[in-house]
Structure formats: C-alpha cells, structure tokens
Image (cartoon, rainbow, N blue to C red; front, side, top):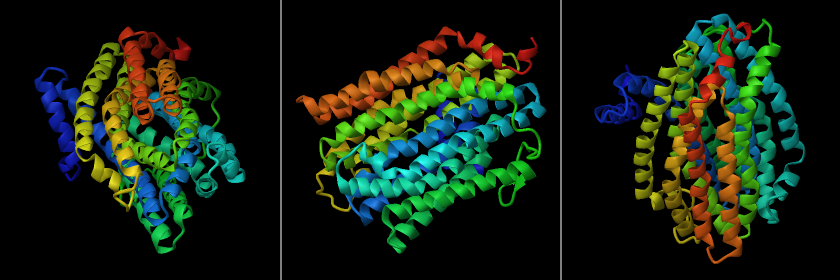
Length: 479
C-alpha cells in the first residue's frame, strides 16, 4: 500500500530496526510504535508547516514587524491548544483503556462527553479574543505597529477556537483505537488547505495577517466537519471507514466520565498552559531587546515546532499502547512500551536535530527576503540552541504520553513548570539585565526542556503510576 512506502514510515522502520538490533527495543513494539507514530508525526509536520508558512508569507508580504505581531498573539492562540490538548489527553486515556478492555459502549460515552466539555470551555475563550484583542496583545508590547498586527490576527483567530479544540478530540479518539492513519489524512488535508488559502488571502487578496488568520479559520471548520461526519456516519468520502462510530442523539452529560476527564485532563491543561503563560514574560523580556530579536525568536520557535513534531507521534503512540496494555491489566507490558518508546524518541530526535543544524541558515532565510537583515544571524544562533534543547524536549513528550495514559498527569505538569518558571524565564530576564545578552536567551531553550525531561523520567521509573492507573480502568468504580 501507499502508506507502507511513505518515506517517513520507512525512516522510522529503519530507526526501529537499528534499535532492535542493539537490543533497546523489541521488533514487535518498534512496529506498533511506528504504525501509530508516523501518521501523527506527518500530521504534526503538516500543521507546523502551516504555522511556518503563515509566518513566512506574512514576513515576505509585510515584514518582520508583522512577524513580531503574530508572535505577540501566539500565547493567546496557544491557550486553545493547551485547553484542547489537555482535555484530549483525558479522552485518549479513557478511550484506549476501554478499547483495550473491549468496552465499546462506554467508549461512545467518552467521545460525547469530551465533545460537550471542550465546547463549553471553548466559547468563553472565543468571546475574549474577539472582544478585546488589542488590549490583550498590548500587554506584551508597546510597539503600536506590532500590537496592531497582533490584534488583527488574534481577533479573526477567535472564530477558529471551538473548531480547533473539537477536532483535537476527534483525532485522539481515533488514535486511541489504533487508527492514526485517518486523523493524519484529515488533518494533513486541512493543513494543506490552510496553506493554499493563506497564499490566496495573503498574496492574492493582499490581506496580510488577517488573511493568514482567515485561512486558519476556514481550515479548522473543514477539519472539524470531517471528523463529525466520519464519527457519526462511520465513514468519510475519499478517506474511508472509521473504526468507531458515535450516536449523536444519545446522552452527552455523564458525570462520572466528566469527573475522569477533568481529573486526567486538568493537569495536562496546566502542563500545556505553563508554556503558554510563560511566553508572556518571555516575550516581554525578548521585546526589550528590539524587534529584530523578537522576529528572530519567533522564527526559531517556528522551527522548534517543526523539530518537535516527532514527540506528538511518540507521545500519542505511548498513550495509546500503554493505555491498551493497562486496559488488559498488563502493567509489565505497559512499562515496557513506555521505556522502549522513549529510546525510539531519543534516536529520532538526535537525527532530526543534526539535520536542522546543518541547514540552520537556509531555514531562517525562508522567513525573510533580506539576507543581510540583522534578524538573520540572531535567528540562526537561536536555531542552533533549539537543536541542542530539542532532544530532552522530545523525551519529555514521549514519557508524558505514557503517563497520560495511566492518569498520572501531575508530574509532567510539575516538570514543565520547573523548566519554564525555574529556568527559562529567569534566563530570558538575565538577557536584559546582564552581559549574557542573547546567549541567555539561547540557554533558555535548554532550561525549558532539560528539567522537564528529568522529572518525567524520574516519575516513570518510580512505577507509582501503576497504582494510579487502576482507578481509571473500566469497571474500577465497581471494585
């Protein structure tokens, strides 16, 4: 089949084969991990490529100040994915455990309750972004041009918030039942549509940052509609059959499921929100260093996002496989999945970081049309720093995915908070107050990722997640 010949899949098969030969993973677990991870990684690459294209198109069409404005709007837009991703972590944990236990009727209830919960959470965020975007962006910068671009971008993005959150639930449901292919096709098609629409709106119609945001809104609506149709009808034209169907007329409000979703998901929301909240002071401090530094930082974070996409695949593969093993009451196998997926993650990230480091300057030049711009060498240095720091970030994602499946979601939150508030923010502050300057900003990348990795690894090695997971397994309430 076409999917078996996909270059990314073949790359991961090769990495898995080498690791198996070294005795670090078993061939069966390498195959299962690859089958679940590569479609999600490809989806992540497509989505992050869209983010990169947004910034690159706006940078070329409008200039670095517009990139800075989009960067100042970024933390607010990140709230969408912090909330959606957190609730989706609860969804995949409950879905994968029920799938592993063969409790398919309970699985449908999880999907409906998840959709209702995230919709209720999304609407206030939409209202906030739509009504006071200028005031929100102005909290981060006193540059009127950057604030204007950021506010215009954020206000239009407000319309995409409910759809972006709901389609995360649709994706996690399918991954939880061992189907990573369908979410990849749907979300990658949405990302491709987004890039195409952005090109039309930004260049063809001259809409600038508003055009980039409008493309995101339309694409988000299309992706959400595809998941809804597929889950209700059981299949989607041009995509194929869905492995699970959901009755849209049945009960949505299940207090027990709501309680489990919140218990698992809120710490993940907190973990994701740590980065979102931390970006506020970080961008304020970076902003004090000038618009070229802000543009360079935003560019490097876009490239960081591309490098970090393998973690999406390995994290979700860990959530699904560990959750299914726990649903079958096989704790030893769940532990083996978590450990071997971590080794797989390290090897993949090392190769990705080496590749990006070799092409750091050409990558930066995709965002600016002036190769002698002062932002270019700064961005290149930041990209090198990101290449060093991205490996522990990848390990963090992989282990967090395994812990999410167990319901033990607090420690990944602690690790993320320690990295951001204990190291990344203070280091960025030192850039504005000491002779360390831009070197301190570069160090902040490592300060963000290394403590998180150490905390997550410690927690997983402790094995305490095994007892926690028993409370969330099917039938636990009857024990």
